[in-house]
Amino acid sequence: MNPRPHITTKTAARRQGAGPSARRRMLLVIGILGAASVGLVARAFDLQVVRKQFYQDQGDARFLREVDIAVSRGTIFDRNGEPLAVSTPMVSITAVPSEVLDNADRIPALAQALGINSDDLKSYLEQRSDRDFAYLRRQMSPDAAQVVLDLGVPGVNGQREYKRYYPSGEVTAHVLGFTNIDDHGQEGLELAFDSWLAGKKGAKRVIRDRMGHIVEDVEQVRAPQPGQNLTLSLDRRIQFLAYSELKKQLDDVDADSGEMVVLDVRTGEILAMVSLPTYNPNAVTGTNGSQRRNRAVTDVVEPGSTMKPFTMAAALSSGKFTPTSPQIDTGNGHFMYYGHDIHDDSANGVLTPTGVLTKSSNVGAAKIAIQLDTQFLYDSYRAFGFGDSTGSGFPGESSGLLKVGHTWRPLEKATIAYGYGMNLTPLQLANAYATLADDGVMHPPTFIKDGDNPGKQIVTPQIAHELVTMLETVTAPGGTATRAQIANYSVAGKTGTAHLAAVGGYAKNNYNSLFAGIVPATDPRLVGVIVINNPKKGYFGGDVSAPVFQRVMDGALRLLDVPPDNIGRWYVGGPMQAGGGLAGNAPPQSSQGDSSAQEVVEP
Image (cartoon, rainbow, N blue to C red; front, side, top):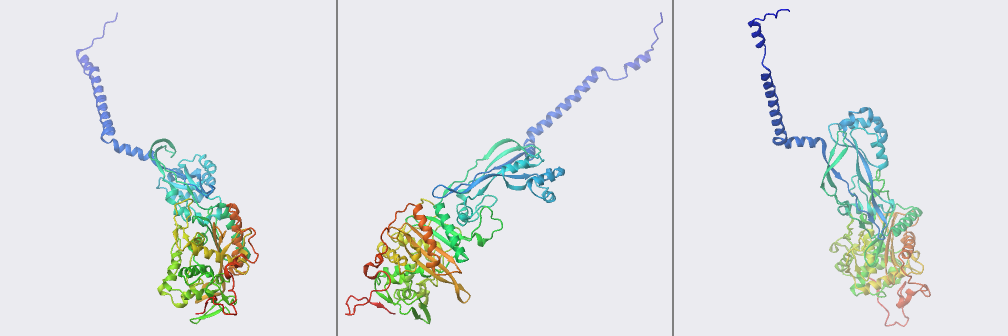
């Protein structure tokens, strides 16, 4: 048996002092862990309590976003419920530029799907690399947008929007106007009723992942309010009829432009309003302000002889004239007044006041106006709305021009009587004729169906009836607008032909051709006004504009189921010849010097 090695006391002592005991080591570890735990708790307290809002804001800034909730713009309907303007859902492609640039190898495929040049797209993104948001393409169809989104390019997302669509296209373009890419009205009724149609976008908070995709809806910040619908007074059928017939006539007479307005006599509602040339509101890019201007409301014309009924209204209201007296001597069709030759297209001799309208005598209208008090004549014109906006509410509506009466020189007074020296819009003229047609009551013209539109008495019902009857002679045989006749309906109206203004006076061979008419004359329902600007093939209103009235109103009366009022009434002796020479030339004077012979006006 081997003896145990001898361990000296010194060696044993060294071993016992070689390090801390196990207990001391354990206490050290526990102390370190305890300190770390306290630090962690303190840090957690700092993050979750002391600086909680700061870090929460930082996190939200990276992942929480407030996004708009798109709303649909209200639909515009015609009076029969046919849609004229609707909003269709689209998708706009957006991006976080920096994230797309981090995946530059995906840009060519993205550009191809977007239908744009790859280099242009990269340059566009680089210019916006410091932004968190940029549009890549607005208002794509949902199917086309999905092709882009299916590429899965980091930072590329889709955003729901709406685009305006106009089913009638250029037929209603000038009335409706259009919206911009953000769906705000820019012109026409889209602009006039923008706040009503647009609604209000909503807003919600969402969480996006690092790719920019929405992964959770957090809360709704603001509820969306969809736009409200709008029902117009327009009748799409009559609108299309007016558009097609006016367009055909402009082509036939080689005219620069034209306008037509159709009003409901009893309510002032605008059933049709057309301006040509026109444009496509579904593709506004490339058009200019001149093409988009609604000339029926914004442009003015000198009305020519269509002004004569309102001179006659003042004459009848004055008590100095009746439809048949006094007789006006228009001579050989020339009347020198203050050095100016007021002339007719032909010699008409002695005319009744009705005959002045039938034959459209400038001389007769001037001689009648000369007999009237200037202020009274001016006030009469103003009462019919000349020189003032109609109040239709259409953006950019012109008030026309009628000089203040006390500034009129004698010659101005005479020429305004037959439509020179003042100007008005086609809508103003239509509204004035509608006033005559509705027993002398004026309703402000309106684009809204069934609106509250009370009327105002302008002339007495008796005078209004007399004027409409007098205007029937214009479309009867011997009048200037026989081409405005409509089978089985009585028609009252007035032609107008006005030289176009030019530098230093009037152009010799350039005209505006007008016609304003009322149907049926015995129980008026509709008024139509046509203005054709600078026709090259013919220029008399009865030849150029009256046929458009005839074709449009013939269709409109049937579309609205207005019963005929003139079956068998034409033309045995001419029904308008009743009442002692109501139409045409005055009856011959008795050779016995009949004491009932009427005075002849010869100023």
